[in-house]
Length: 132
Image (tube, rainbow, N blue to C red; front, side, top):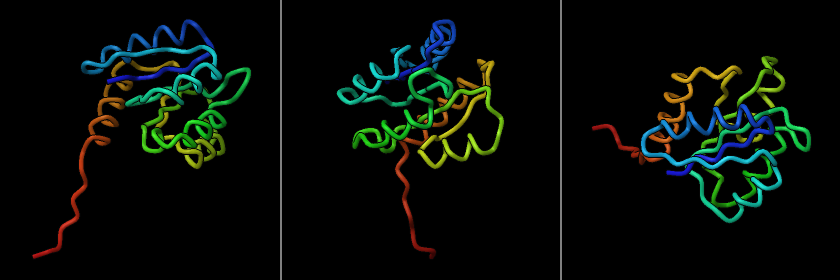
C-alpha cells in the first residue's frame, strides 16, 4: 500500500510521512515540490494521497484538479491538510475531488483512523440488492 504525501514544509512532510507509515502495512513517499509529485503520480499508483492546501507554486485545490485528470487516480482518496477553516476553501476542494480534510496541527489518531477508513472503504465492493 502506497501513501503519497505532498507538502512544501519539510517539517510537515516528515511528520505526515511518519504518520502514513503507521497505517497498516503502508509505505509512504513524500514530495515537497508539487510538480515532482504530479510527475510521480502520472507514472505510479497511490492508494491514498495526503496534500497541503497552501503551497507556493500551486494550491491544494489546483493540485487535486491535476491529480483527478489522471485516469488511475479518479477514485484515489485524497486528504487535504489545511489551516483554512472557511467554508469556501473546503467547498472548492470538495468540488475538485477531495475526499476528506484534516486540520493543522494534525492529530495522529485522527490521521490514522481517517486514512484507515478511506482505504478500507476504497477496497470494499458495493453490492446493490433487491428487497425480498
